[in-house]
Image 1 (tube, rainbow, N blue to C red):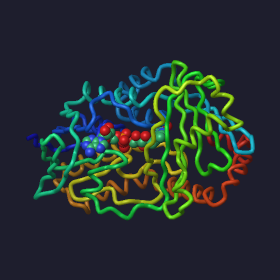
Image 2 (image 1 turned 90 degrees about the vertical axis):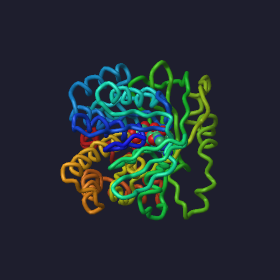
Image 3 (image 1 turned 180 degrees about the horizontal axis):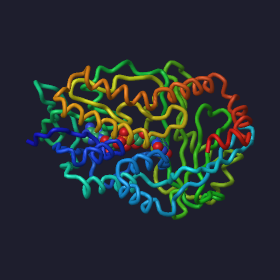
Image 4 (image 1 turned 45 degrees about the horizontal axis):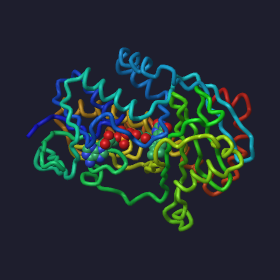
Length: 378
Ligand SMILES: Cc1cc2nc3c(=O)[nH]c(=O)nc-3n(C[C@H](O)[C@H](O)[C@H](O)COP(=O)(O)OP(=O)(O)OC[C@H]3O[C@@H](n4cnc5c(N)ncnc54)[C@H](O)[C@@H]3O)c2cc1C
């Protein structure tokens, strides 16, 4: 049985960023995932500029490697289409790009392998986790186990670490889910531009077309869902995506010759509509496990990576002081919400407004088309 200082459960963007940030701090780190890499993750595949900024902050060489990896798939602009037909194109100054998560997560994973001394364990599905004395015990599906002084839960939307170690607050009424499909041969899909389509009757939510290279586009549809409203439960997202590409007057003509390359797959997005408890005695939660997806836009790769980085800082403080109490690890919650709290709160309010008055999206587009607003956005 391994006995480590830090066990990071989950090797997605949160877990890999955390492992990279812990490099050279003299801690015995294990990075553990249920999958073996490369592995797919259902996503829009748009890698936000903030992810690159974090890499640049951690290590110039890693940022350069990321820039080279991004290669041709840099996103220079995004076009939004309002339900009333108005459109806005934003030209981005920050470096962002699209990459299939199969490749992007593998890139991060290989970086951890080549740049750090972390023990990497694949095909290890965490099933049971508990604290006993000064150790956290992690038991895996294959019957093996490890112990750690600190666990960092980066195990995504259905986090076992969060369910078993954190006092879960009740499920939030507002939640979000989305479906993703890969298509080839979509007419008019531009190489360096992401498209966001807001469609009448399907608000608040959006349909996206994100190019991922080789004439392939990531197409998806995500929508807010209120658990308290019966009508929301009836919407079948897969069916909605199919109807959009087959029947919608705006988009169906562009998909006439397109080919679906794989099944339409869905996954949930734990959006940050409320502050949660994301730490406790001897554990921290990051990324989706901590519900850190941007409530309005649904991006969570960057927030996952930054929270992984902040968790690594907190882990170092814990080991330097020998303090692993819940009162001490709470500094991590503060750091995360200092970074995202205000923005998430503002965007949640906007989301709630759109939920109640979907037609307002047309007004936002009108305001957003003002050159000064566009300059501020980009
Ligand atoms: C349809 C859809 C579209 C999206 N589009 C975008 C987008 O375009 N851009 C963006 O920025 N964000 C997007 N997101 C959000 C983004 O995918 C997540 O926020 C991001 O992946 C979070 O990273 P993470 O490391 O926290 O979790 P994950 O990426 O989910 O990684 C978690 C890891 O933990 C492992 N794991 C899970 N359970 C266990 C276990 N029990 N034991 C061991 N290992 C385990 C998994 O195998 C996985 O490797 C989208 C989400 C969805 C659902």
